[in-house]
Image (cartoon, rainbow over all chains, first blue to last red; front, side):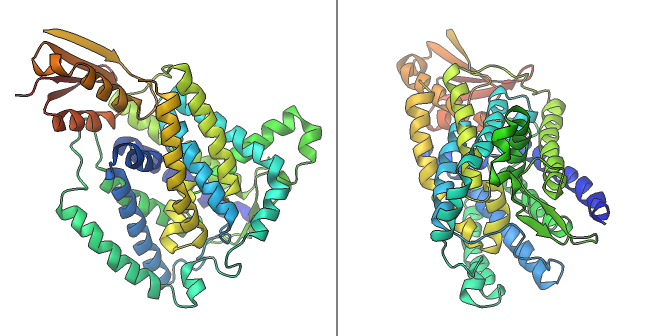
Length: 372
Length: 79
């Protein structure tokens, strides 16, 4: 019975989402800001915290796999890397900088009353739906440019037990993390009330990603639901056109949930399926967590308007991010919190492509959006 | 002493820091001589770290106060 699985998946996603939104707001843990600050100010503080997040998640996933409690690795929905992933990743980098936050950052800020994030989320829905128009030939590109079709992760590519790759990676990574720690580079001099140091937020987010994989069967994923919402709107407004879009009929998710229940399936189409059961509560939780944190601090933003250039940037950035997340078969949250820690090739390609995209986005932001 | 206020609440990241940097450079002489203080109103939590850090690195004195739902970062001549 699918209902059996939904009984634990829905509340778990809601709780994990709420923790994520709360923690990200307290630390202002912005994955878009991590790359943007590096490009604009040579400030790597948030990027170092992100590296800690990935390392902690890698250690947890590997420990879970060795203990036999994560039998589903690599996760469902993870595909092979391709040129499509790289293109999507670069475009995503542009979009997240223009939007002022990634798919999760826009949600917790929306919860804290940011009008620009509301525009970014609207853009994400529009961009995800827009992808349906190019889906048929983008799939061909993806197929034709696939790298290592039979390998989803580096350990699979190397044909060895994952521990032979993850353990040395963690050892080398720990050397850098320890150096940064000793140099005090993880600590930020904060003045904001209730501030959570990003390194603490990173550890919590790594634990959330692990808990999601343990209970739900996969790490945090958000972006397919933006497509789903777009599908609902498009089906309502243009039913004839909608009927001809194959993207909304795809069912990429088909897996056995970890704690009982029959197989669950789902896709980007406007159906209340497994994707909806997993991601809707997660999104509601992130928005709610950001809202609770902001209200408790008396910092709810009350939808204050920004200059029109910034509003256009947030909306356009959201559209680009939505489109790019579908082109790359996943958003940054999926790839950074889930794919990178298990050394998924698709996630590595996506994250490498993010940097040049973020650099281009930063240039556009400074020259055309923020007119100082 | 003249207090110059800038309300940059609700703006996209990282415009808060960029605007603060621009104003600090624009009023550099008056800031250093103690003729003016710059006050930035922001609701961006990260800006309460980045602006004071940037100002301190440039040798200015900085204070951060929380008001009703936002922060006021005041930059003035260093000690």
